Image (cartoon, rainbow, N blue to C red; front, side):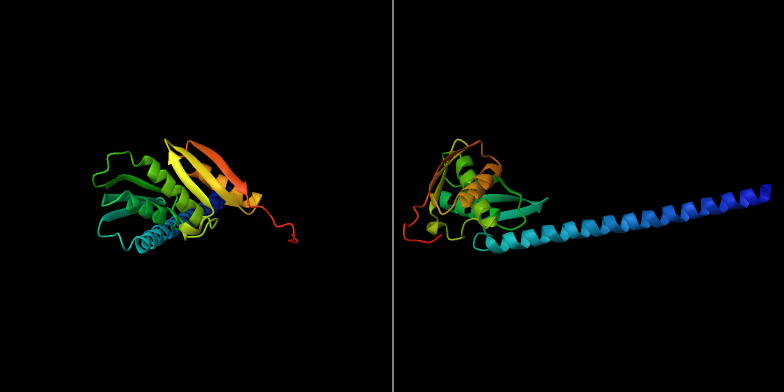
Length: 191
């Protein structure tokens, strides 16, 4: 009887051991697959940002980590600075753009507000709320000391709410001054 109990215990222990080994291998495979997926996503983001910044890659270096794009380099103008940040921020998959190492030749003012304005514009494009052709926008974005000022007109409350949600989510925005109004509707239109 002791031998049969010992044998049964040995079988149970063996089964548990095999199950644990199989689980560990499956868990390791899952981790490897997750890491590969993560790496592919970061490579895809990096390639997309490089494509968006192709005209500026001789002046800017970049790396991507955890969805954050790190830009460094020295640019000729504040307009290029804003455009580069907007392009990077508008790329799908980008969570934030770090420009701590990106400078403008001869600039005497803080670039923080320009950076926030560019990030807001990029986020609105990325979230498909506004068109990539910024000059056609019916709203204007400006930033002063971390406070974003929004002016202009939109077609619906839903669009305004979407804009506000995105703007408030942008890193560096301390406050939003909302002066967005609704476009007047035609009395003859049937809504």
